Image (tube, rainbow, N blue to C red; front, side):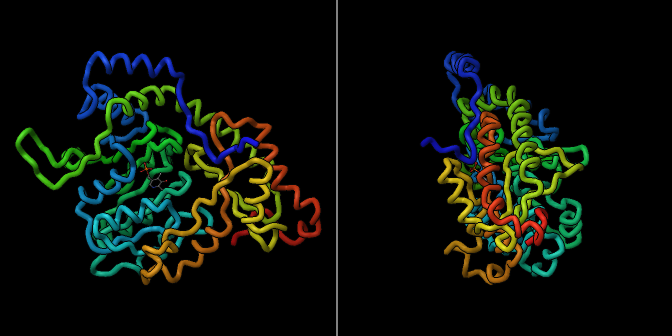
Length: 383
Ligand SMILES: *Cc1c(COP(=O)(O)O)cnc(C)c1O
C-alpha cells in the first residue's frame, strides 16, 4: 500500500528549471550573491510585500543569524508548541529559553501570559505563527515596547500570509521564513530573514557570509548561511507557480472544513477573516471526552487506511530531554492538552479530493457507531 503522506513537495515543470540551470552553467557563478540569488531576493520582496529579504541556506541558520544580528542574549520568552528548531536556535546562541503557554484556539503564544515571565535578564520574545495563523502581533508589540524587548518571529509557516491587508512578516523586528521541502514555498532547503530596517539587513548579510563586509574586513564572527544559485534558481521557478499551489491547497482545506464541520469531538482551526492564509497545514484537535477514539487511535486508524497524518507538535519542545529540566517547562497546561489532541491531515496541491474525502470518512466512521455521543458534545468544544 502506498501511503498518502502529510505533505508532498511541490516541484515545478522540470524544463523550466533546466532552462535556468543551463544559464547558471554559462555564467559559472554558483554562490555568493549570484545572479539568481539577487533576483530571488528582489522578487520575493515584491511577492511578499516586504521591504528587505535576506536569503539563507535554510531556516535554522537564518534563526541563528537573526538572533546574532539583534544581539539577543539572556532569557528569551518563546513557545513550546513549535518545531524544535525554534528553541534549538536559542540554545545555539547561548540564550535561555523561557517557555510561555499558548492560546487554545490559535495555538500561538498567549500574550496574556508573557508579562509574568519577564525578568531583568529577558531581552526578547520569539513567537511562532503556528500553522500560518498570525500571532496577536499588536499585543506582543505592546509588551515588547513596554519592556524594551526585541520581537523576532519564527514565521516558517507564514509564507504569503497577510493580516489586515499587509504581510504578517512586517511585524516585529525580524521574521524568519523556511523554504524547506515540506513548506508551501520550497527551494529544497532554504530560508530567509525579513526586515524593514536596511542597516539590519546589511548586518545580516555580513553575518551570513562569515562576517565579511569587504575583501579584507571581517566585522563579526559570522557563519556560512548563504543560499546558492541552484537553490535560488529553483526558487525563481517555484515562485511562478506558488499561487496555483496555494489555490489547490485552499480547495482541500475547504473540503475538509465542509466534511468535518460538525463531527463531535473534532475541533478545527477557526477560519480567520482578517488574515489571508496559505493553507500550509490542516490540524484537527481530537477531544477524547467527545470522540470515540483517542488521538493516537485515530492516527493509527488513518495509517491503517493508508493515510499518514503527523502529530505536529507532539511532544512539546519543553518535553524533550534537553529542555524538560527548565523551570518554565513545568507548567504549560494548554500546550500540553493541545499537543495531545492535535493531528495534521494530509494537505498538498496534488492531493486528490477523493483521497481527502476518504480521510474524512475514516474520521467519521467511529461516530456512526456511537451516535449517542453526538447529543453530548459539539464539534467546536475547546480543550
Ligand atoms: C521548518 C521549520 C523550521 C526550520 O526550518 P528549516 O528550513 O527546516 O531549517 C523552524 N521553525 C519552524 C516552526 C519550522 O516549521
